[in-house]
Image (cartoon, rainbow, N blue to C red; front, side, top):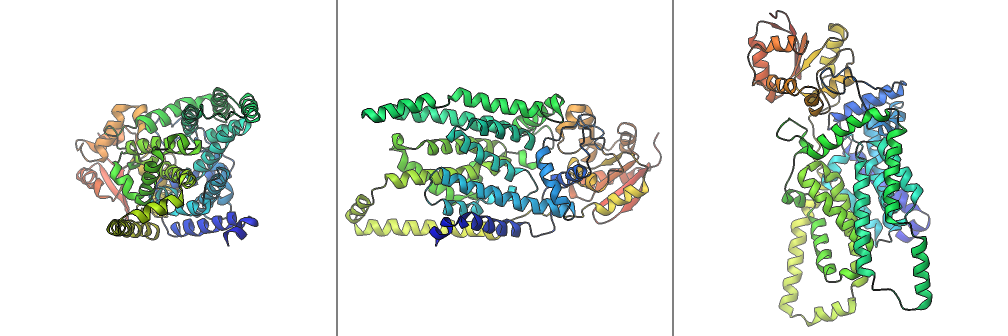
Length: 527
């Protein structure tokens, strides 16, 4: 059956349809999952109207107020056609499903190019990667980033210079995760050195093969050229860009301060930037860890027979395991890379296995030992597989951000306040929703608290103290005098109850609007 599918290239179509169905099912609800989805939908809407933003006056107290770089520019451009079809929030959900299905088709294509055994089966295992699927179901650039990475890996192994240059350029336009291209290139070059070290003594002593090897070495593109080509593509992507060089400081903030250092402990950053532990990482995909552990055990004694693709995928998965432990958001890359290693390692193992010897060794084992091993395997499968199926069928999608959240309160602000008036809101993660529904008003901070911290560290701390309720002295005066805000928006989340209490104790604020989601106050008397 599968051979017939492959003959007519229907295997690619079937992978696409299966993934379209599964990830479409994951998106079949009324939630966005992450507030950034509202931001992406709004920027795509601006682009659809022919507006390329270079400032964000809707964030009055951040470094992005006057100098904004859309580091998801290509992603937002690709979202634009979907916004013509339907409501922008539904459009970005449709795009997320389509981009994910395409990415997994490219993954299947890569496995076939790498001559992996059973590529179709390993591709279908993508739906068992619950941690990655959680990230893929959010409205983010993740599927397109992975798609570029699969093509980048292919270009590295085939040493296609022009393709590497183009992909590095595209990565910069896609989003600020482009340093991953450099990291992956470095891992590949390390892999190449390790592989060559273990195989340098395996040169065949037949003259025609020696001639072939030396001819191949002469035409082989040097590693340092590959690295320079990728750097050149990145530099071109930065220079040939609507934002040009003024995006460098933004990239310093986004890549160094937020992605690498991330001020966990100093600022209330997004939960994705917090670390995790190895046991949580294992428990999210136990089947992959068991398979990869078995592969490592069998291959470690045959290290000189391990293929380059297996060495590479191992180093790649290990590097991203460390990154995931530091910041859990890298799980979106770690599990696919672990799946890639499992597929490549299994292919090597399949070539090494002598089934006749295994059968003879199995027969030589005592009956009691054979029963013990079989029962152990059965128990392990019983313990692991129900957990895997449960993760596939009961995907936990965050329900904090339904479509329409803050819409009513935002529309009230739009109609009941002066244009450009500043609204002091209770958290930086509310900004994308307020921005999506109402650009009539200006706000305080959004996307990440680091942008406000860099604007003014003391102001950032004051904002945090007020919104958490820790500062209860002359709160309204500080909001009005320091932040120039005449209106206060507070969402009815439990963590903001102290802030609500502080505002309502004051005689300088009047409640103008309230619904089940938020309260809006107006400053009426500040000395």
